[in-house]
Image: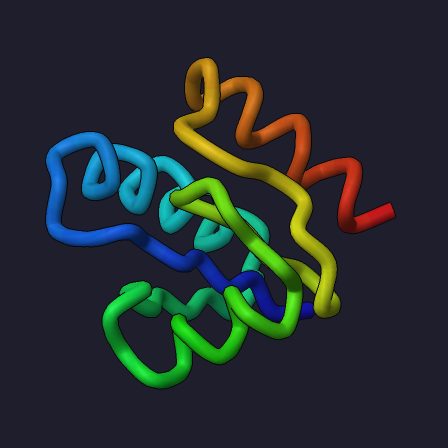
Length: 84
């Protein structure tokens, strides 16, 4: 499984979100990529999946989370659910 996080830019909230998802994916040995909306990959994924809110977490070509997670436990719970 691979998780892809698309960020809107170098904003503090995006960096905080990145850290939470990166830590959670790392704990569960999930491959994790980060792309910025201004880059080609991020832009193409956002268009393909019709994403309008950011940051957006994508797993298996589906948007599974948008925005900043409520806390690390919420992110952890989502990752565990995805692994089932």
